[in-house]
Image 1: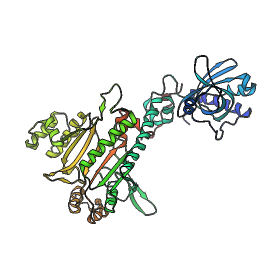
Image 2: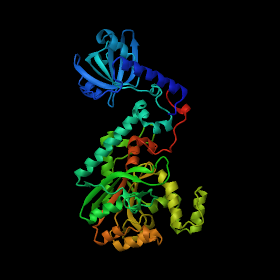
Image 3: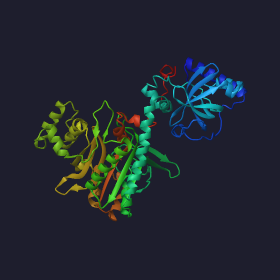
Image 4: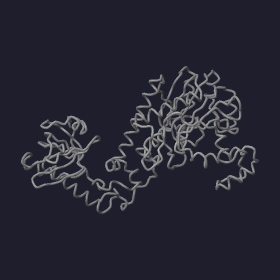
Length: 490
């Protein structure tokens, strides 16, 4: 165990208290403790003179001679307890003084109100439930070191109450999404995370080996192809919410392991998905945040009130780069991009330069919810072409706070066109084609709308958090323990 000198000293002191408590007959790691309710429940039903059983972690202690005030904290609230030598008896009171901040205890007592008006419990009996061998982060300043907050999320949750609010909001969001979709006739399904081919998106997969089958396998990058097979099989409305994995970069909006929601509806299209996602997210904001204006006070708020802006990809590019953009020769658009400090090699096509301009310069300007529609077909090989222009596909990208939150498609159900486009994407490598998916399409898939929502990014929008790591309980980190002098405990 890599501990600094002062951490080792704290641990030695706490181990000494543990031994003293054991000698006095107190088990340092107790068993189940039946409670009257959570601390929030007890506060809500407070009545003077009521007998209660409560439990929690000691987070503050104030000694006053023959009496002690302390605060217990559980996952719902903090509550003051009052310990008197005359009530407990000499030995239990002396043992209580051996307790440390961070220890878990259970108490039996009687509710009362102090002279200062604070709801409290007078302790008649207590028992030790779990001894803490390390001090908690310094209570007034909390846990500030960002890396330690991510690596030791358990300390972050103890020290920073607002962190728990973010993850409570995330939990409520997941529950709301399921209820919302089930109420509209969607079935939640589960598809394989380990796949023989990593399909459904363009991304680098994580590879592993399946010993029992003696073959390479991939962590899924998207569940799309399996969900479409269910449309072939007769499901009309399906969704899956779970983990996807992409062996790519880490930044403020990307994590290699992330949570996504994918939804498919037979006999729908891109407009079906636009209406659904607009209603889903605006309803979620009202449910979770109590308002359509979301974000932190210091930020420009996001207004999720429908209807949201709808604008084509081409119109956005022309707004930003000039009305004649698509008439300019490729050399001219390359030079324009370089003048904007973009990395534009001579090998880039007109379409590639255009998407670089959109990706690096335009998308980040779209703070309020915006449906960007009619994207170039080469960008989205699984979507149906626009009837009036086959070079475009009938899709949207929902952008909020300058980041893509949700792509939605009129799904391609023509197996011949789908094969041709996947072959083009595979650049002649037949091993990259999912022949089972293509065979399924040949049995017939109904026209359908589909979309995927990045759950982590949606939580960021609703809570105003700037980094994806702040909405993941245990974000991916490079294996490295903080140095001893980086530790927050003082």
